[in-house]
Every structure is written in C-alpha cells, then in structure tokens.
Amino acid sequence: MKLIVKKRKVPLAIRKLRALACRLPPNHPKVPLIMNDLKKREAGYKGECSIDFPLSFLEPKNYFIFHDLRLQDQSRFFQLDTLLISKKFALIIEVKNMAGGAVF
Image (tube, rainbow, N blue to C red; front, side):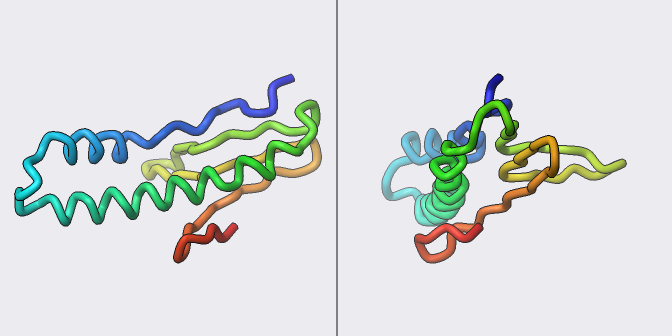
C-alpha cells in the first residue's frame, strides 16, 4: 500500500515567478516586488515540505497522505497543505513558516 497518495509539487506560482525573475533585466522596476513575492512563497513551500520528514516515519499500511489538496465546497474552493487519513481519523495539517521556523 502506498503511503503518499498525492505528492507535493513545487507550486505553479513559484515556478512562474522563478521564470519571470530569470527573464527580467536586473534593473527592471518590478524586480524587488517579484523577488519579495518569490521569497515569501518559497518560505511557505519550504514550511510545507518540513512536515514530510516526520510523516515518513508512519507505517505505510495504516495511513494515506494527500499533499496540497484543492477541494470544492459548493461554489468555493479551498486548499489543504496536507491531509492524513487512517482508519480511525482524518487529520488536516496546515503549516505556517514563521521567521524561518515551521509551525504546525
């Protein structure tokens, strides 16, 4: 049985910002804004990835892990960083990377 059902990927917004940063001339007026946004998003992604190591100790036959889920509630969408499911419970894990340290 597979432990990780939906793997975590580098978010599209980060990939786009990285590509944009490489293509803009260094003296472009939007470079500081783009780099600031990129750093914030990369810090958030790094925080989300920090939960992967502790979760790797779980027994694969007892748990399912879904990373970066986008679900719909009637007409709205919402995102979950990680969803851990066992036979007895479902746990939503939201991670915030505050001042370089992840908070679960």
